[in-house]
Length: 417
Image 1 (cartoon, rainbow, N blue to C red):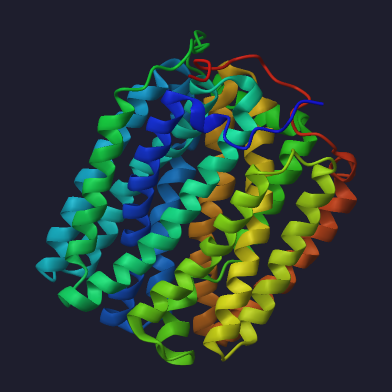
Image 2 (cartoon, rainbow, N blue to C red):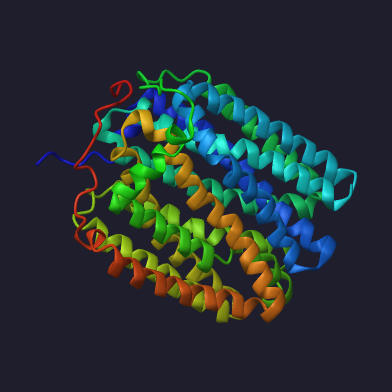
């Protein structure tokens, strides 16, 4: 057996540029998300408004995902990525003006809808561009390092956001930093040199738009991975209620909120580093099921905790377990999908995954308003455990899934250099 190269993807020039731009942009957007939650709860003192943030971010993704995926498969994914980063940077700059002027809250929701319209193209174009800029044999390693870059940004972003809000007395500077990060990724993205993209050439129709759904239904392992992630985040995510826990339960203020939001990503970053230095999973299906179940258990403990130390510990452990499922899902989606369908499959994936974060925020806020934040988080963790049992029973193929990279379409970018 060949020795596992933990740094194979990082030896590719294309990937280093991609990862650098993504890391900076993601850090800015994580700062933005943290600042929005804090500012809205400070101005309203109502957890339901935290849910409205998620709703404003989710609805455009649901409405536009299918046509967006078709566009990504028809046009250059590199330029779609660059364009959407520019759009998101402009919206972040407008949020800075909104915050500094203390403009009405409804205007913020309008800007969030605009930001979500950029996200609906940005996430799938970024995911489907990755297999074209690295050789197929190191794609799994690239996914792991990409996950590590995201986790590091998700740690740094909330911490920097909390410090800046406290130092500046407002969130406008955080939004300005997010705008700069998006523009930086756009500039680096324009320098990428992807491999040949197998573009969709058929007519634009309902059947062509839903081809990604058909592929997911036929690939039961992908369907299982996406379903698990959807309901785990929809039911078990406590991120939307962290401002409530920081202010009213743990009493730790905006810097403490930054620590709470960063903790899951600290755990995930450590797990990504471990996964990069070990060979691929031999029993990926079992790892997927156990990691999602462990995540749900961690959310139950967090919901009941009144100790900042215990809360940070279980959030970090939950983030580490969640990262296992994230890497498995992403490798499955990209390597078991033909290149000409990747945009549409990734767009459907974004509806399942990205919307689960945002709709989960709305669900958490609504339940917290009716029954309190503790009930909202704990019941979501219990629901996650029930979903794992349901998927393992209804889709038995996932229990037998072994190696992730058994089927590769054969595309890849430049060779390492």
